[in-house]
Amino acid sequence: MSEKWRRHQFLRELVGRVELETQEAVAEHLRRAGFHVTQATVSRDIRELNLVKIVGPDGRHRYALPPAAGLATPESRLARLLAETYVSVARAQNLVLLKVLPGNAHAVAAVLDSLEVPGLLGTVAGDDTCLIVLSDADSAAALEDRLRPAHAPPPPPPRRRS
Image (cartoon, rainbow, N blue to C red):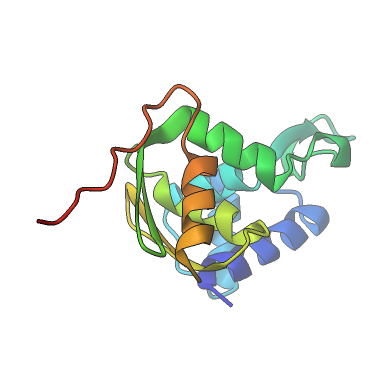
C-alpha cells in the first residue's frame, strides 16, 4: 500500500471527524499521524480528493468530502486530466509512454491504477511522464488508443528494418 494511498485514506477519514479550516491545519494533523508532508503535498491531496469548503453550523468554513452525487468517476477524472494535460502518447510492445504537462503524471497514474484497464500490470510516474506496463502488446495498443485524444495526430507507422 503506497504512502500516498494511506495518506488519502487518512485524510478522507479525518475530514469526516475533525473540522479543518486551513491547509496548515490539514498538514498539522497529517504530520501528527506520522506523514511527512509539505504545503504543496497537502494542496495536491486536497485537489486530488476533490475536497470542498463548506460552511459549518457555526458559520466557519471547513474542508469536507464532496457530496456523493458530485463524485467524479475514475473514467471522467481520466478524461478531464487528459483534456487538461495531454502532450503525447507512444507505445513499444507492451509499454505505453504518456507525456503530460509537468506535475501531472502522478495524478494520471493514480487514476489509471484505479481503473480496470485490461492487461494493466502497473504504472510508474515521474513529473511529466507516465510509464504504463501492460501484459501484452494488444492491451498496450488498446490503451494507447484510449489515451490519445480525438484531436491528436495518429501514431506514425512502424519503421521497417532493412
